Image 1 (cartoon, rainbow, N blue to C red):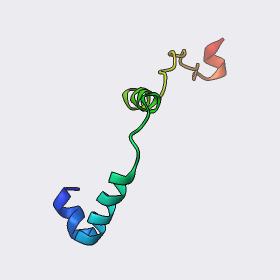
Image 2 (cartoon, helix red, strand yellow):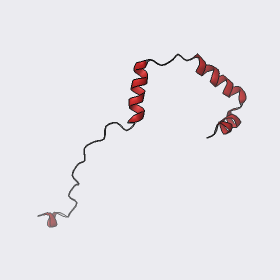
Image 3 (cartoon, rainbow, N blue to C red):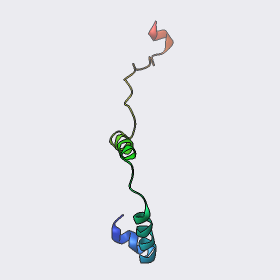
Image 4 (tube, rainbow, N blue to C red):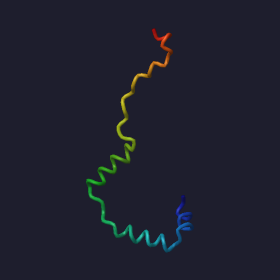
Length: 63
């Protein structure tokens, strides 16, 4: 969604109110920035090790 689309949907008063609230927010701590950086660079978490594929052959063929 573009900035113009958001403005058209929300209206200029709402957008101005959002901007004012954002300006009131404190700066994040260095620890928070570090934690968010880890989340954003690896959002799915650690990649699990590959597992062997299950044996899907019928029992008679597996023997």
